[in-house]
Image: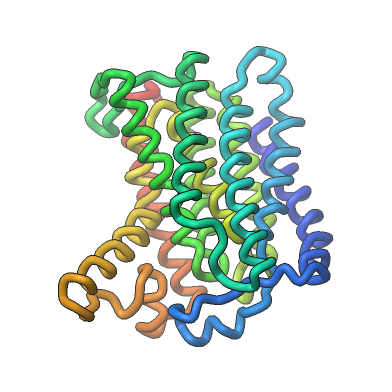
Length: 328
């Protein structure tokens, strides 16, 4: 029940904050600059307010602090740690967005600074979770019900790189109205179901709040978008997704629930690599993958619906794959 109440609270708070935030962002002229290398029809979105991720960040935070108070009083702080980690990534995204808005171009922090800040945050989160016995250096393999026992230093390096990779993959996915939010919604629901079934209500409440916050945000972000989440929102979402997986000690489930994130990132890597190797040839019409389908005639709504449907299927597989881990 608390999971559903957290979702409802986050939805309401996000929707109300969004109603007030969007006019404020317009007044501040916090408009998004559109990359020249994207589809030419995306230029019509130039000036749409960005940093809209603030609205669901506020909604999720408020819902967790209210509905998760019971867990905190009982000494269960994993949900709070997940929130704090997500907030750190959201802050990195906000700094990046603010730089873009003030410079009126689609570049903010340098790639080097982003990587270092994200890596430091990931390592801090993992060390805190490990010291609080919320995390083991064992990799549970979905479906096979076995765990690969790794030395802590090896696990730490692996986990930190996975977290940074996941966060940036979510960021890459945020390129079509409603896409990142819609794809992440079933991921949040799956994490809530797994955590709730295993008795980890501290994480489940956060996941439920995230699902509700995303629903509230999509009111304003679904095509045609009235606001973009910006790096503020996409980095927060990436941090939330990977933090929940690690807090539940099932990081490899990210391969399943994050299938679209992975496909988007791989399409970018393949496109750039092939372009350099062949001196100008391309595998995709345009990367990342959502642009490839757009140039193939798909509407933004079709891209979102198909990618979300694929995510739902793989989230069901993730749920089935974790049956042995949680004794469900």
